[in-house]
Length: 187
Image (cartoon, rainbow, N blue to C red; front, side, top):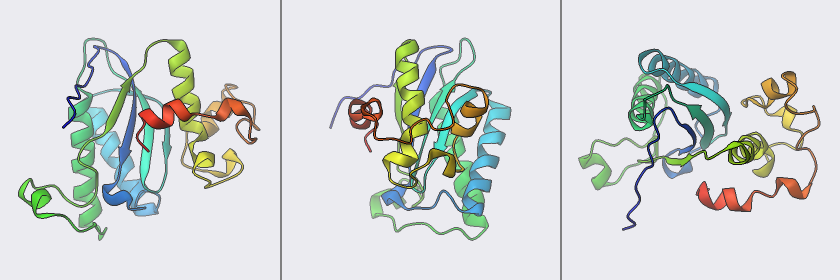
């Protein structure tokens, strides 16, 4: 088993990938989005953090968070978001994938992969690469050819803010070859 250790930086900026169990495409229906939005809102009220970029795809999400000064606890936030989502989603009739005996013994449901992937953002260039990766993801997964057509992304806010021109990411430009980030995001 790999000896992976999370890197905790007080007040840090982090890129996350969170994936559904068995990559079930359960995150983009009205119910799914509402349950996720409510879970994130609740946990942000209890343990504040800023969401700087995000994209929601059918079976996973990517986001960049900035934690408050002195705070390192993104793990509890993700655990609680997953718990709140799962509780609400199942209570409203959402379905889960089958689970192994091991998952049952650990009281893990068939909604989320057990863990999440995190990367500590180191500097402006690293931030820009991950920011672009998040917003290009719907095109990378061939869900759209025009990024403006994917509704569940902060791409739209970035265009309004002038960070991107409206046509950003809609070509096969080599700048959008994120092979290094793809390997680290474990997609």
